[in-house]
Amino acid sequence: MGKESSVVVSEKMKLLLALLILQLCFAGFHIVSRVALNIGVSKVVYPIYRNIIALILLGPFAYFVEKKERPPLTFSLLVQFFLLALIGITANQGFYILGLFYASPTFASAMQNSVPAITFIMASTLGIEKVNIARRDGLAKVLGTLASVGGATIITLYKGPPLLHQQSNPPSSSSSGQDLVLSATKSQNWTWGCICLLGHCLSWAGWMVLQAPVVKKYPAKLSLTSFTCFFGLIQFLIIAAFAERDLKNWKIQSGEEVFTILYAGIVSSGIVISLQTWCIQKGGPVFVAIFQPVQTVLVAVMAFVILGDQLYTGGMIGAALIVVGLYMVLWGKTEEMKQEKQDDNNQTLTKHLLDSNGESKESSVRTDIP
Image (cartoon, rainbow, N blue to C red; front, side, top):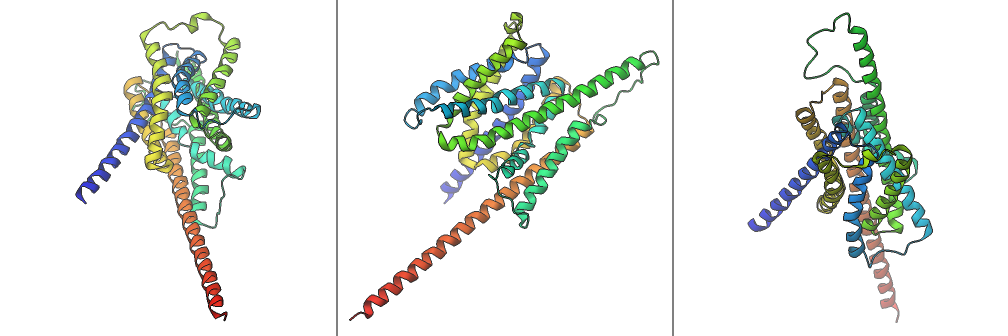
């Protein structure tokens, strides 16, 4: 008994440690991406290099591991892969990098907590997710969704005063006009950044919803990810042909640029995918999703220490609402799964009892026959 309990504790500790490392990798990606933008890496070139590295890592691995279980390719599947790449790679990463450029890593991470709620709205609209408001789990999912959407709206529309320090010296009369113009420009850029981050979350949620039926037709997940990454790379290259013609922006000119690109490709697209898959297998998707807000806390601390980013009241209020909404949606989904499992068990038991009664009646009839 003692050995078994120690093994269980050890497995739980491994899972918790893996989840913390996973969120740390996610948090690091927000900071590293912002550093890349700060040092002048192109907003188009950065995701291209990231997807090239990811494809080099995932492609051969997917080819050899899923060689036997990979279904044959059809034109219809290729079109679906292309659409998944357009939503899940091009729009998703494009909106993210623009939102990060205009806003901050902290609020990028906070906005991502609304993805489960947005996914729930899309799945419910398409009939993939069922909602029963009369039950507690259905009501929790609806209220959680409203809280998450409300939090994202507050982050977008209301910045609020800074939390940690205020400007101590008031502006002089000669510079007040210029300061007002700069303040208005920053506020406008901040709003655009939050709108882009909302587009990023919508794209991410849409990609997960549309991926579900594709996975049923093409269950080789690593190969599916590789094809999606390949088509996303092609789409970004087409965009770059119009938006990034200066060859200087394609050259890697410093060790910082090398580090940021390698981190994005190897850690964020390689290690994170494998680590997240292992965590989902061990703890389930709900347990993994519960740790999502940990990333926001880590990003806020890292952004304040490394980048000197400021924390604002509106962002914190919005982030708190999103986290509360996230947990309500997850709780509702967990309760719904428990109820469905209980209903299935009851149906199985009822069917078994009916079959047993039918067999006993048949046997009694047979014994009565002379």
